[in-house]
Image 1 (cartoon, one colour):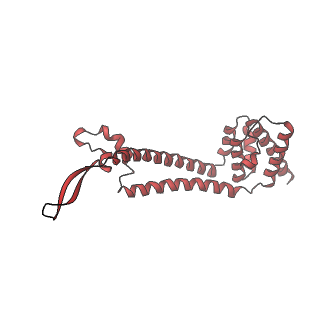
Image 2 (cartoon, helix red, strand yellow):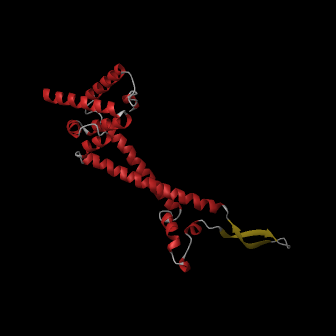
Image 3 (tube, one colour):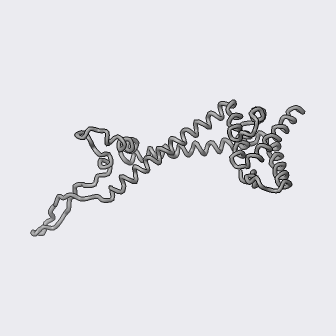
Amino acid sequence: MKTLVMGLHIGICHEKEKKTKKKILIEYLMQHLKNHNLYALRYWACECLCLINIIFQLYLMNKFFDGEFLAYGWKVMNFSEVAQEERVDPMVYIFPRVTKCIFHKYGSSGSIQKHDSLCILPLNIVNEKTYIFIWFWFMLLATLLAFLVIYRILIIIMPKIRPRLMNAKNKTIPIDVCEAISKKIDIGDWWVLFMLGTNMDPIIYKEIVSELAKKIETNSSNH
């Protein structure tokens, strides 16, 4: 994407240089129409893999904590609302701070004796805070990625929203231009064009989209 932008994310540049770069970019897009579907699919596949990755990590973490991790954050948040006599601190339940220890020591007769005592686990005080942060972080990532994947699916299955998204990206581009170009190109080409809008100066982007729409319309008329 950086190669395609060619420094056009900066609007202040020499007019001659800007025209040359615009021409090169438009020629590239025209020559490679219908060749960007694989790029778009790979891009979206990587986003899906991110979601799968975070879900898998949640599963492993939950397995590691014997099924307690998925509800860990909810239990911590709801802890104060539970009746006093029924309260069980979920952080202490999963990360006990005190436990029973058995020490083996030699007695006065030379035989090994067992001594029961209580051991303090200070590291668990840190662990309980660390894992509550990890829980919130994982849940945030999973939620955002889930919405992102749904958003991408809507882009794929609902072509009518594509011109509106392009127009929302740059309000200076007329909606009819967005509709015209979105109908004439494949989803991969549309995605590349849409991503260019994120990485390019808005005014230059408008000029490129307008010129590209005219060229595509001209080519369609000739054929």
